[in-house]
Image (tube, chains in turn purple, blue):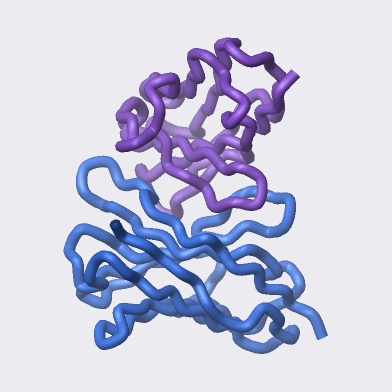
Length: 107
Length: 121
């Protein structure tokens, strides 16, 4: 199985801050990497697919980058509604696997 | 707009079979665009992909669940189902049905609201 490791596990930031979450895979993914946002008590929501493609309807302050084994999710200007846990997930091979999550809180 | 809704018992006894159904609206379950899948999340923990199936009937599942998982579909009701046999307390989780959009870069682009299933005697 491909192991996905996110960092940090949690972070605290202020409104307007630039936030960066990283995800490292145990093998090369050829950009088969998605990011999801999960607000408390809600189902996850797709933000980014193919490492850098913004899902329709997702605010443009979210962006994804990276290649190979290393990927990044960036929130350019943190908003209160962005308080959530973020997961990366690989679709390069089965079984599909997720990172352990990064909790983003407001300072 | 495609919508998914899980349904099924919220409590299952150990060693029994967990059965959930996902009702699809806004698209046909015979769509060639999607696999139809299940993902679960134990309370306070991360996400685990369980498996999925295609309209042709082909299925794939997470080997970690060994042979306990069965996923099937009913085109007459536009539903697909999950069965997980021989459950233990470790199977207590919120279960989500999802669409697995497979073209290009596969991704889980629609999710049900989730249903909590507890395993307890």
